[in-house]
Image 1 (tube, rainbow, N blue to C red):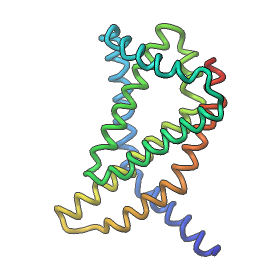
Image 2 (cartoon, one colour; image 1 turned 45 degrees about the vertical axis):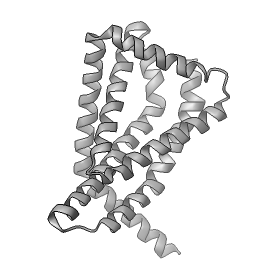
Image 3 (cartoon, rainbow, N blue to C red; image 1 turned 180 degrees about the vertical axis):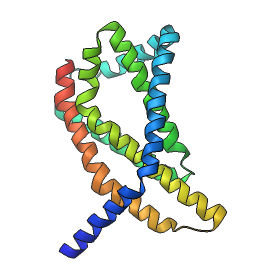
Amino acid sequence: MTCFQLKLNQNTKNYLYSLRPYVLFCSVIFVLSVFLGYSAACNYSQEIQKVLREIKEMWASFQGVTSLKLFIFIAFNNISKIALVVFLGIIFGIFPILFLFVNGMVVGIFAYTVAETVSWQMFLVGILPHGVVEIPVLILGAASGVKLGGVVFNKIFRKRGNLREEFSLALEFFLRILLPLLILAAVIEAFVTANLVR
């Protein structure tokens, strides 16, 4: 059992090592999309405010919810989304890139809006506690999805690569690394960030 566990650990390490160029690529996309979101919020503030009001109304329904229920909602929401990011990467990596871009835009818009209406300190309080875990997980999940999409592309057009093995590695990576980190991020967001913002 111990040898099998060690083998799994080594597989995970090797997989993480193989993700390096994809992590770099996804990090660049995320950072650029944050800047684009911030710029869009600066230039189209009225349109952005309408969207934010709708989001605010949606989240207002969670005001009376206990931290435990909030944790369950956040955990389920984030786990399901990152699972889609990883495994829908099989469609040539398109979905992970789009999801990463949209989320980066949202962070940029959120940064501008909170900084302008409240303060930069409030933005950092609202994003940093869980964001230091959640954002790297988002990038790692997207990198895994893009890598999976690359293997599919090679399998179809270049007749090389092992899709079954790659899918198995991505699943193991999701279960062993991403899933625990997403649960941790949900705990921080529900029990720490929510109370700090309140």
